Length: 143
Image 1 (cartoon, rainbow, N blue to C red):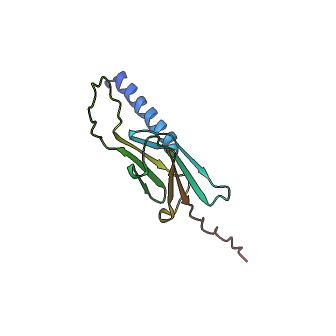
Image 2 (image 1 turned 90 degrees about the horizontal axis):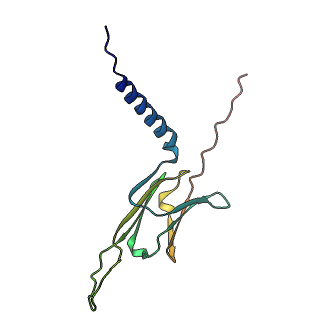
């Protein structure tokens, strides 16, 4: 006689569902690390560049770090804690400090050395030159 545990079956089904969802979402994977901010990824009109735009209001360009590989980009923005000079009796202080970081998988392969970044009015814009696809294989007819 075999012992059957219905809860074990339910657990197996749950793991299968998690695996299926992970496989379904992995092409769109976006990792949120310590904090988040909105990011847009688009392609230039001539389709030679990817353009990444991130909204980072309140951050200065000196507080932003960017790391690019052939297929990922990591953007980190960090406010350092500032000393507050207390000249009055304070009831509430909402000075921000901390780190926001986002890692994105890019939709096309890029040349990391070609990355150019500009920041204006809290909008970070990064231009990445796409790697040109290698020539397609040539079809050879058999004689």
